[in-house]
Figure 1 (cartoon, rainbow, N blue to C red):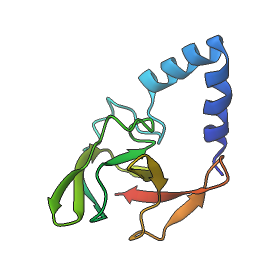
Figure 2: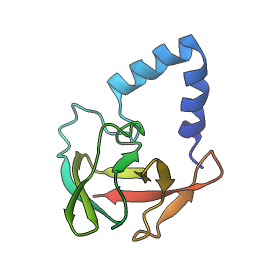
Figure 3: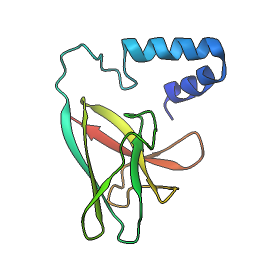
Figure 4: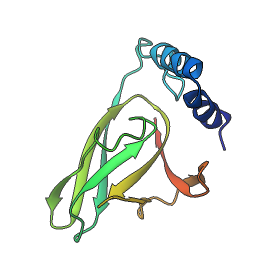
Length: 125
């Protein structure tokens, strides 16, 4: 478990914490890359296979776990895709499939989260 994850949850509870969190996001992203550091971002294609799914969203610490930021599109029969552009780093993510949080069955690299379940890990170099 990463200490900053608990720190973010604590800060979101208090009004002062929210201001500090916004200042932290302006100065530095959660994975330690400064937005103005000149680090080249990478195009990453994420796929989810689910023929019976009606909607799939990609959520993770790269989009503040917002299901509206990265909706996925069905490309081939049952294959959902999304291309994201992010700087190198270690990210945690999941899918929201028809309203249900799901892990990536194709990625066995995972870690426990503060909710007692697991998130997948994406490492971008």
